[in-house]
Image (cartoon, rainbow, N blue to C red; front, top):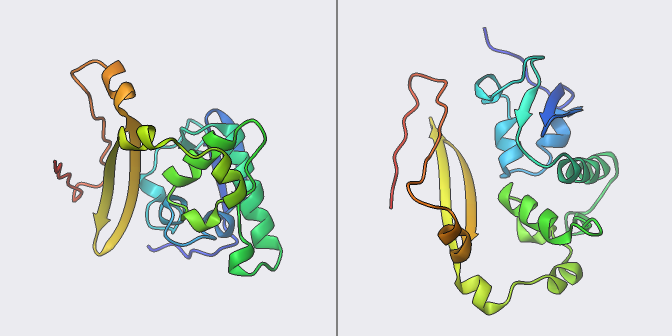
Length: 177
């Protein structure tokens, strides 16, 4: 039996050990993000849950709450598309910017003036290693870009380990170099 999915559905989350409750509409407000894909209604049954049945997300609760608060504001108030810009939380500007990029939010949602204050140097940008993770199922695709610096790669000793939980027997993994 197929579930009826609405933006008013209540979603129970455990984010880094902190319980957060929000609506599906808030999580899926910005199309093309990891959150909008995860909570589209297609993937929730396959996402890890804690002992209480809350969907577990291994993110910083402080950063996630800041993100959700701003998405709620956008959802509750009429904003033109160009007015939807994340404010960067004081003291966590760089971490928040990296966090929303990891979740697939387009750079148009980042406060440009605050962003220019924390831009990486050319050398740091050159030293980035970027990896892409893509989950495809029947024409639906979720993408995630991850980046680390060369020094972070050197600090992580070999062998590396990739852990993947597959919940659907028809799911497969292809690793590309």
